[in-house]
Image (cartoon, rainbow, N blue to C red):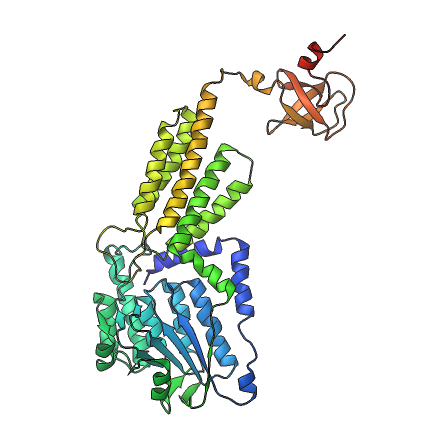
Length: 465
């Protein structure tokens, strides 16, 4: 579970995303309920949902939608199937509140075999009225860590750990389970397999499948947000509510390969903007991609040394152009970029059991390296072409440049040339605003221009008498 500082950063970064990301989640919220034909016919309904990703704002929105739908549809039971390594504290707490306040009895089911409820998943599981586990699953390792996977330093670690332990103990005590062990899960990162969890009353049931689980729950009494209730699921229709497209798209930001590719696109887009100031589209695209990628990094195990190497690559690319190093710095930058990519998801120290083991996929790495190599070739080519040009003064750079009249030239006015606004004087006649112009020379800060469609000096010299 990521600690509060990390989650606060995440919230700030999340609201810095483009408006369309927020709109996607808002659309998901608006689509939170649908009429159920089975309910109209009096058939009881069991709602099933799946928490199989990192706990994040996208999955929290999905769980919130499912809990709301179960309550609005009058379902007799909500089954939340869990297989998660954990995630962000803020998102976990939203899920816990939804489950604790639901008027529909809820079951957290750690399944199938091989699944786990680790870190934030422990809190979500313990918040349900019933916690069931399939054979071959495990629960625990809920010690708070930083967003990148590192341990929290000093006194802050003790403060955050105590807060998390008290929070989880209160949830577990409210559900009548073993509040002593869950505190050890927070303070010492201990874990239990399914059989041990049931025997130590950390979990309630050991069930191999959903059908058996529903049979075991028949007639069980629980206390929901609306008061005492008895679970009756005999003859109930089982309905699965899957994440909708907008939730799936939002969750993809936390996929390690997607986050890496977004960072790569943003990285090169910003460089293009630096080499071509005023283009805007590459710059805006790059910033958006970088923000979204760093939001995803908040829930992934990160090695910030990899980020430093990638930033060093950017600096080397820029320096190669500015210093005309003929491609040497660009090649070094490409090496830094590839090394940084390899180190990106390899945090130093002992790997945390509460974060997924991830790495940059080979196709993504090859694709990014290919883009980097292509970009490097363009940089080298530009550097070599610029190195072969004779030195030019400012006036020479403007001679022959094209632009357009910002105001009418009669004969004086203003023109837009080489990305700047200049005072200008027309050699003869009058020219309306918006018409093309060509620079003939410069007198101080005033450009001497002629209409852009006029015959140039070179053409006049070669003209027949």
